[in-house]
Length: 405
Image (cartoon, rainbow, N blue to C red):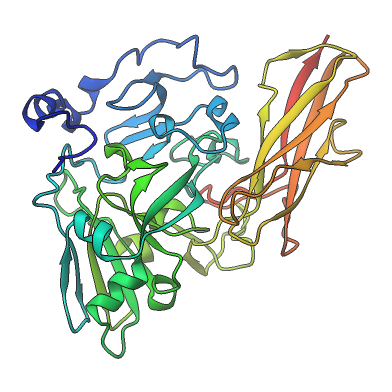
């Protein structure tokens, strides 16, 4: 049985080549130059090449944070090789031997279990759906006032078809005891510094057993890339990626609410309908982030692209929410004075992003401000201003300035 998507016929030579992954910097190429094919005008950032990945924008190399260029979002499913990367702890698995690997389910259960990936494939009903994976801090670099932290553009997200087994089926096999309240998940990554909290997240039992949360072993019909969580990844559709545990290895059922660092101290938002606050009135009551907010972006034209007066221009973008489904997308070509409804492509599923399109023929030369706002089936929509101290769940009306000649 294989040892991971980094492995070739045998692991020894490939593992040796990837030994530098522990330090990350040794596998970078071209990180001090502008890549002419990749770099987009608004983000002249460093571009790096990691194993089994196309060149992506570099935020940090240890742990790796890599952003997907917008040009890949012209595809409905984001290619695995271009899918963004976000890890929290720097000691990543370099290879996983599937002959030895086991996913353990224990804690407040009557029948603790240990599953191989082969067990999951053969002993449980497979499920498959398209879902958007999005970092909580996607688009943080656009917040005003500025927010410290990873300066993501719009590329800390990706849409994929995930295949695996229901978390509910694994929990049922382990037989939850009466009084089970929370389910924690943990992966194979570890910290480099003593005292750093292990990256552990939790779901309440109702969410864990809703039949939609998945333990995925495939991404777009292939084994998960190592940098995206091989061999198993939790998929929590409609929720931000902080819950989508990579290299999932441990599931524990608790008879009490989990109070670990990554639930009680990190990934918190103000406890109101939008998770919103202001710099001069910070919220006193904060709760763990969960459902994705309504958001939409432009994919085409690119920032800096010159358009021709009197020529039809295909405007295109993506809209997403937390699972209610996108009802409409409106576009303004005059800075928000007038709005026109865009055409929506067929839905790929309620947890997928949805593509929108609109043809526009600019009548005058000069700088034109394009704007886009999406509304979901629950009536939630993007707003003119939005801020919180962490730069999470951006949901403002996005704009794009284009030059017409």
